Length: 193
Image (cartoon, rainbow, N blue to C red; front, side):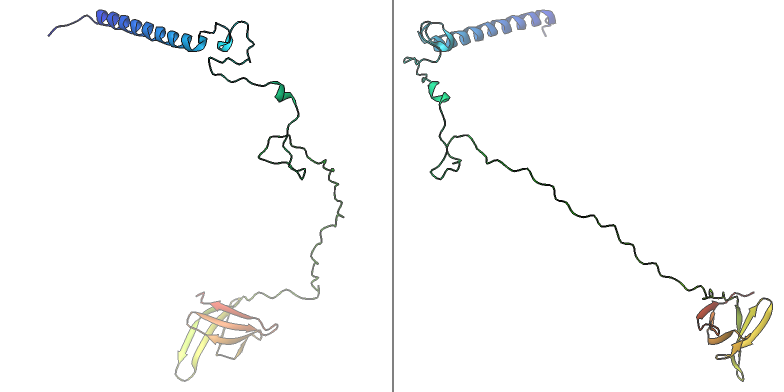
């Protein structure tokens, strides 16, 4: 296997690249020079030295631009005076009157009426009754055992206990009583103490 020095390979590649770039530049310059000059001289845009820049050059085929026609008025209005979007023309708008601010009267927000509670109404008395459990007997039926501030009471469905509570229903884990003073019904769960 033949080993070449990397520096020699790099120099040779750079030389070939330089030659290719020079050939491409020469080709580009030759093609642009022939088309740009067109045998007419070296003026801007291929125009001859004595010819104006916008003038017509018959040999190169570049059309002449009529600059005088651009300064004149434009057509673009139809027969009814409105703008035709398919014709060139300036847009004229009718003067717009400045909008007048509308004045609306400001009404203060309304507040909901506050309901007055009579001061003579007493707050509902808290039920301090505790349900201890039940006694079941064939001769007496189901009896609820209750406690209130250390005193123990017992009663069946429909009886009044301690002069304040009527027993409405006796369940396994709770009892429903009615406060005699105001008719409220309260469910008391088993407390065990």
